[in-house]
Image (tube, rainbow, N blue to C red; front, side, top):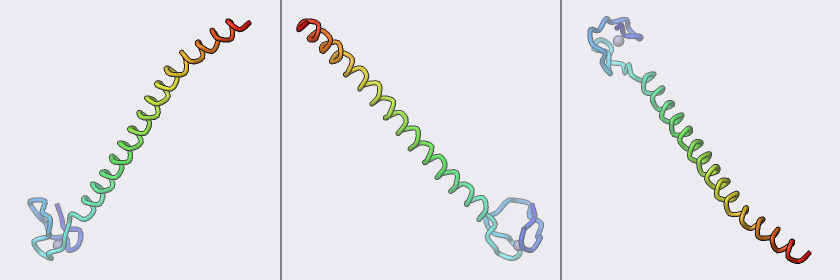
Length: 78
Ligand SMILES: [Zn+2]
């Protein structure tokens, strides 16, 4: 690996260049923070979707007996 600032050849990947002392991990860190936000956003989106599905499922389940009850009541009146 070569330093992107001064071109110093380095055997190990280090946070700072041994020749010019510049930080070399900025780009890598930026990607990881962006990836973290992406994962966080996906998690929120998934949890909202799951909550929406659960709410929809419960609503349909709760309404169905009510509709059946109303139909029974109507048939009784007629
Ligand atoms: Zn350097």
